[in-house]
Length: 217
Image (cartoon, rainbow, N blue to C red; front, top):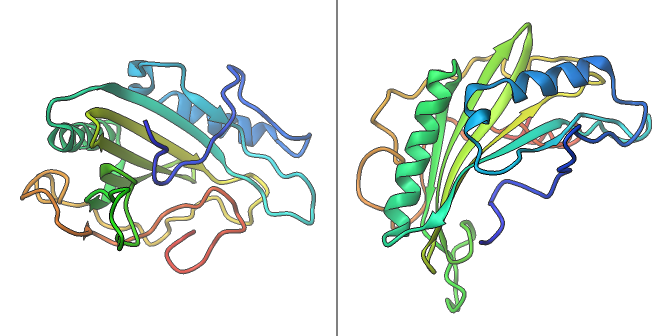
């Protein structure tokens, strides 16, 4: 299984992880909110989690993250199965009160391609949905992603992120991107993509408070 497009390795300690005492009770509370989402209990392995922290006043804060693996299995038709699981992730987010506002669908970048596309997972189809949720004035971000390996394996994850308590604002989605109508996105309908297909604004919450640039908050 290759690495997910939008994810990086994070701590997998059961209690979460903190780099220093720059983690606050608010950061832990926000991690608890993410861990309380209904689909977390459906994980096929222990969720990876990281409580937000800041190493020093000279460095941007690192945001809290929870990654939940909801499917990890072989499939006869990995592209279609990855897409089906991504659509299931969208449904779980919507049912949990999240606003799904964007999707990104990408064909694989094949290892032997002499001129591969700039975006996409190596040797895997990728179907992703972006969502946000506001709880007690704090905005949370989620990506539900289905990956279908050309080798035949399928994985679906939902990664959630929360701002650090050291950031000047806790609501990073004040513009409230509107929800995508159910059943209309590239994840849910149409042919498999021959190139990148997107629906909704390409806005994401970065893993670090120091990342804001363009569509990264």
